[in-house]
Image (cartoon, rainbow, N blue to C red; front, side, top):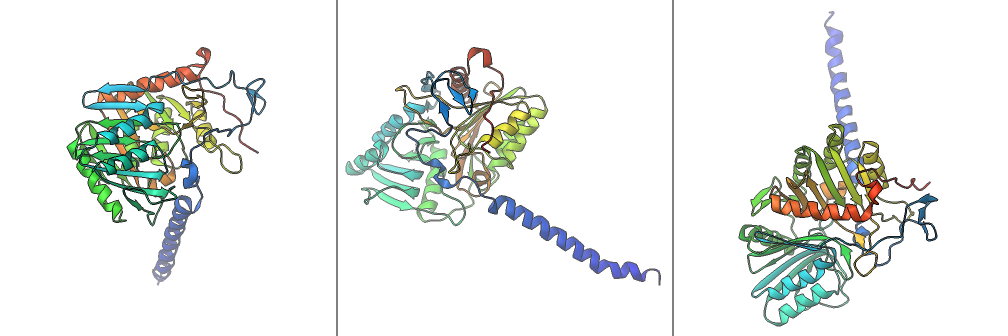
Length: 394
């Protein structure tokens, strides 16, 4: 008879366990799929950004001194490596045009946003000279029907956010830049002869053109010079693991970051291990005026990261979006690069492309470029130190 109460408690224990599982599941769903993030329109180009109110007389932000007015970018924008070239900022758009102009048989392009622009004009000219051109975009900025085959695709979850070009089954152009007008800070890798990479990207294009998101390269596909991931998948975990391979430092340039992602966990663990983190973020603002990246910046700075908001103009003195999405491990041991912002949407919902390489030549080029940006942004007396961030908007 003493066992009877125990038997009577079994159903209640099962119910308690089920309730706990349901609560955990609901918390997961709310965290990753209900709590809002910056909308997809975050990719819209700001030709004259003013996300943070500055006093032009003394260069202050909310009453705090920030030094001199934004300087012009003084970093190099073109590098070569065995097998291709790497481009930054002002150089990305004209090189995309040149890449398109060289296509002789076929050309496929995937982008988040497409609008009338020099690359799009080049695509139409390529069509006119007999090249088979097809484009898939997640957001259409055309007011007319383009001259080439065009598909606008809206996945059932997230947005189509990849950015790549494939020409003649061998040449590949992977970038963080959309096919839109105006200048913005971006990076691009041009692979002059990468047939395996071209094949996988062409297969991805074909699926997207048919308005399908397939489970492709979720755990990584070995390609020339590195590993290719499509997200959703294990790309964010692979990026975290790459970050955790750091022995000394991480150099990170990012348009948008949020907490609660595997990559943020990787950064936190590195900082707790004493690894150095240098981070440059865009200072764009949401509709309510708050700086979108401020929460992530303050969090990483509280752990010891050195954080800067970009304030460089282009070589013509014009303001530009800081649209980069890359991280360099140590002095060039590895590179994480692609279309993905380091956000919950980027990790779990959007269709993204991620390229991870341990090719020292490629990774070192990004490290050199990052060092030049840091030196241009931070006064000599502040280099290597955390930059004082503005207070959050009340």
